[in-house]
Image (tube, rainbow, N blue to C red; front, side, top):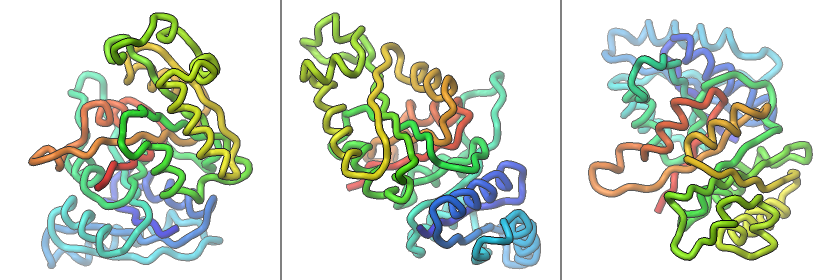
Length: 276
């Protein structure tokens, strides 16, 4: 795996460096640490930030490549991710207080929405990536579990435990969905071959082809609330979500559900964009 870690020298940037370090330690690969400065005469400052990040790197791992780019942060991170090529971008996201609006920083949102590969948001530090929650809405033309297994196959190790979560919301239920389905567990839906059950069966079949252990889980209620409750209620090392491809000027933004999950979940979050 080749990963790009963006740092600006802040505490949440340090967390991104440490999380990228843990990922390389867990699955192997090479890392590039990038910092962006506004003007060419600030390059020496950027180099000092990279030295700070390098001191956080575990000495038993291959040393990261260090890069300084000049310009605005988000466009330069996006440009580097496209030129790499990289399999993953790791970024930090500052902790928000409840009294503030539920917004991501402009840099984080633009990077997540526009880079050509998955983005790992360093909301917390983990030393291993074994207990993974995949939040599959089942509504994408290219299902999240398909993207996850193809793009992040290094995480599907024999000791990994993958929980695939599907949230059923009464407000978002398709026409013809019977009341019992809005209360049923995953096993019941899969046995009855309901639309949601077929999605979960497909997900489990894909995961059976990997080396990881897997289970399906269904929760009922508001999507963001149920994902948050599941993510915080169990000791997950990683939460995986997808985002929908948008058109026009909105292609530079995240959808509301993804934005809320990234803001509220206090676990490392892997965001996998739906691409053409």
